[in-house]
Image 1 (tube, rainbow, N blue to C red):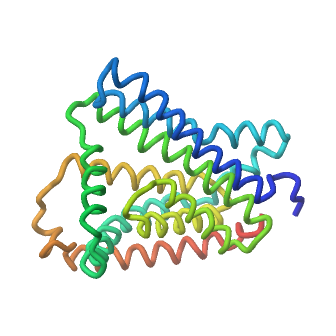
Image 2 (cartoon, rainbow, N blue to C red):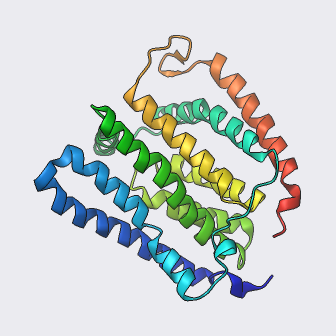
Image 3 (tube, helix red, strand yellow):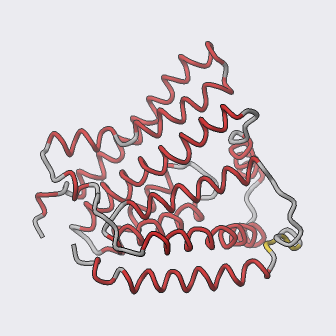
Length: 269
């Protein structure tokens, strides 16, 4: 493989860190300017959108300035036929499994009170009170986040590491950075999601399936927060009902197996 067509791994890591700093810096500046003018409730959605958009700016500028192959640096290949429907099945079946894993983890290793409060505050901050706010939240947390975070972590960072280390290590490194940047008490859950996203990006050699998974996952999470439905068939004593978990686990396993088989030819770039 010609290593010159994509950035070197250490450079990619530093540019990724610069992107994270840029995102937080831009969000902080915009927040300071906007909050006195329009209030926190409105400003926070604009801050979210700008922060998510700015996170990929250094990577885009770096690849352009160094004249790396844009297509390969960001893994902008067309996914294999039939993989998108499998990714959607994987994503939908994953949701109850993730929720149940979260409940089990809370039972086994409950968060300290201050982290529990931090998580509750973070969840409450994503609850909206108007259609306009919901549209802005969806734009920032679903569409822009799904695209920009995948471009940076599974496209730019992971792809650069794949050219220098084993795919497993590349996926683990990108997933670790991905989970840390979220600054969430749910670090393990986000790390595991990052591994799945990285695996899908690697197996398809395409960013588009992981973008779809990321978007659907965020959309479901936001919808669940804002429209909490009391479905008795879904829950059982603060856990997901086995009637939901077992079929979801079967669908997830079968879809993942089919996906792995279908993408075997894509592993070699």
